[in-house]
Image (cartoon, rainbow, N blue to C red):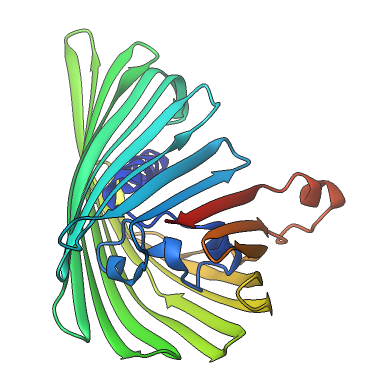
Length: 350
């Protein structure tokens, strides 16, 4: 039953917060060194994206998914954007469409996301005629030079058939993100953040005239810090550290409280200034601690992931990024390196 709730909340999280369309360069720095593409669809940092009339971005990877986004300036210098993300050649249909509008110190993003598959693994069984459809709205505001906040509301519905049962799962989500800037200048950007995510699910299963119903909830509080430091004109260092606290409860399951810690370090080095960059970083996830109600405390595992990639700037308008990541926790073989997934992103200014 616990795995059921985890799957549900993971699906809900996919539709919850409209995040930036990450570039391969950002991925290559272990998601620490923010680049221009990071500001796409970002309701708090969108104004940091500088372009004349049009900014176009696309990211493809070797796992059959990709995205495409375009930003434009309106006549009054506001910003309007449209983005798509989904799979390209998979049997399972996944599509996400986002509309964005930024003005003054505010921004609004609206999203629709849908998963459709003839068969999907859910609740430890095969779910036939699987559909997961949902959407959300996110609003961001810059309160002053030090303080910014965003919040979002979302809803998703999952339907299909597991064995002889018709399922109908509904999930309501809410998110609030508070950011306090400690310092923000040309050399150093340091900030603290506090993120809250709530997911509230109702599961219905019907066999003939008999219907069962159960409710679950998950609350996640994430305090953390981000730092981006430009040591000189050719080298930038990024840091991300967070301590997520997750509380899961519901019908027929005990209340669990999980404490985790993750830290990422990354750099971006200019091999040829304004032309070629090397990005690399490491993400560390320390063993989590889960406190079970009326049961023994459980400890998780240690994970580490290494990232690396290159960025190429053409004519000061087109950027091509390449990156990959490798998880060495169980050892690394040559076949693992050869079959490792990779990402390619392209952005252009007009």
